[in-house]
Amino acid sequence: MGGTNPYIQSSKYALPQRPYRITFLPLQKTVEVDPAELPYSRDGAKGSILEIALGHDIDIDHACGGVCACSTCHVIVREGFESCNEAGDPELDQLDNARGVTPKSRLACQAVPNGTCDVVVEIPNWNRNLVREQHH
Image (cartoon, rainbow, N blue to C red; front, top):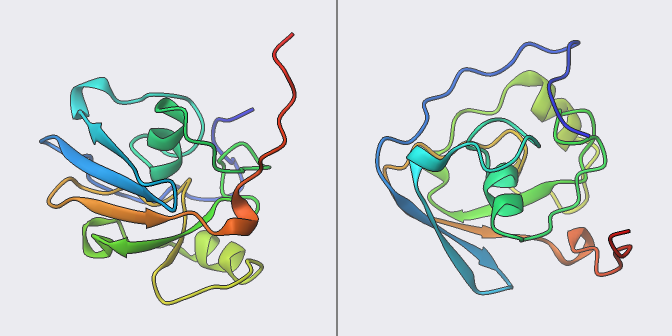
């Protein structure tokens, strides 16, 4: 799945111009984001937390394929929140349906860090799907 949602207007955001790091909690996994390698996958906005996570084999549930049509990719940006693009109305509408929302909650498919600082993201425990089908 993946792509864009034709029913919403895409948010404007700046892609990073220099490498930076994202740490995913509670996994304690830190990845180096190289802007020259974006996009890593086709799920979520280019350079989004979801797209970067999937490109580094970090699972974040995203039932809609990363097109801002659900709230399953809800994450909490613990550090570096200010480097992320502003949440648009479609994202805020979907966050209304998410569990455990905080002032630093974002949809991983829509939050795009600009690379001005390192980022720490918490994947809530209800978002970590530990059951996966085997590849056929």
